[in-house]
Length: 422
Image: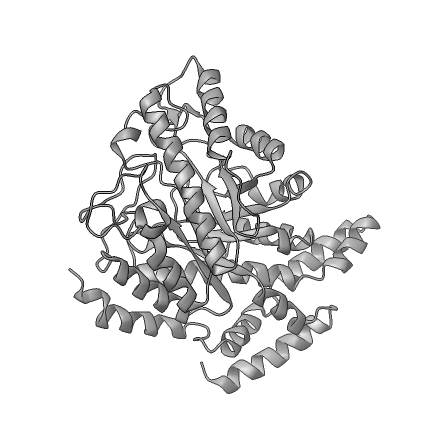
């Protein structure tokens, strides 16, 4: 898109929003302060680098499709992420799973990983001037095949996973220390039951005991933030998930931990955006995993839909941008993976921009006065305001392709790089 057209469209958009009392320049400055944590596992379908033929298995999650060009080495993953970030305005960071360490081709079990296995990632993040987040990997492992890890009654296996959890926190804290930005260490486990269990209580008591031990080592908050992620159900855990929303909500509030809201981890009729204002009353910070569930937690690429809009609106309306860590979480192997990142990240940014361009104070005044017609009418009017023109201008000022221009760039990358991977 030509620069002149972008500037002309932005000038018109700025006037339209100004007529409603909204300053687009201010909104863009706020948007530029929102950092989005990109999940490394879209690049290679959650395979990781523990073994040469590593692949996702177990844990109630599934990557579908076999689109060519997935990253098979750490250098390819870094190359892909650099390409992704070159097509995005604003700020990003990278979220790693524990299976993405540089193990040098040697078998390193998860109870033996150390910060040294991730030093290459930390050095790369320094070179890119970005931060890192981290995730223990409690799936795709023989000791998780029974369906339980931290909540399991097999004490030998449970001790293994406790040690893994401890080591992941040390790795995350070291990343945060070296990079000068807190690393969010997000803990999710697949533990659950396919059919109706009798003894739910013992599993949850064991999970609490395991978490207490994992979190017993203290780290500075400026290096590490601990977050807990619940789930409603998964493949093989349809009847009961140990780490339910209620379990982690209670644990996080009692122990001053973050709560991760993955909008694919709840019932399809639940609005995750509606949970934000409640949780912010009881925890200092939240972590988002923005995804798109289609009928179930299917981890489709994020798009600019009503669900994502409400999440962003609630954060902005609560004036909580400083208290929420924004991340993505999906893995679709049926399409160009670079494109999947760019579509999803831009959709998340659009959602926050849409929220920042809302005439919130006017809407509050209508609401307080009981003028519900006016409130609804203005909310509807905002849906057709030139949001795209403002975002295109944001891309222009960020020196990245505006509008549909990024599509050709990704097509060329596929031709030059992805198509040559075997």
